[in-house]
Image 1 (cartoon, rainbow, N blue to C red):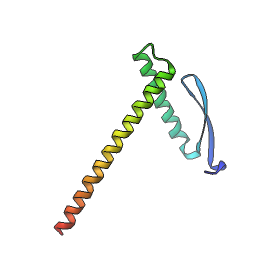
Image 2: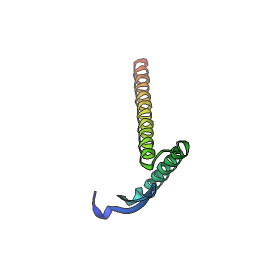
Image 3: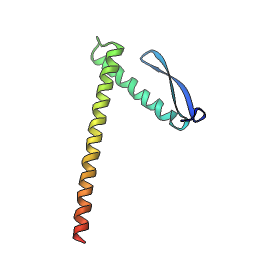
Image 4: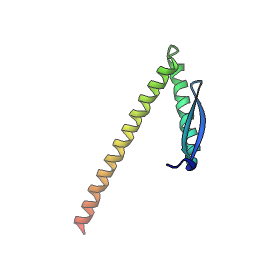
Length: 93
């Protein structure tokens, strides 16, 4: 990625500033992703009043990773089902 294609933005997560670089067209998506992460961490901290910011980030990361895994598994299953239907249609022709 070329430097001129990137935009540096500063984002606050759990009270700390972090600098991120991404293509300019992805800035709003990155901001939305951070907003979702912060909301998730805030919810975790409310549920477990003893949770530190680091613990909330860890739990949120594991939850997001699990959600991504489940979504990818659904996509793979759908792809296999589509391939099976295509084979069935081809054999019927």
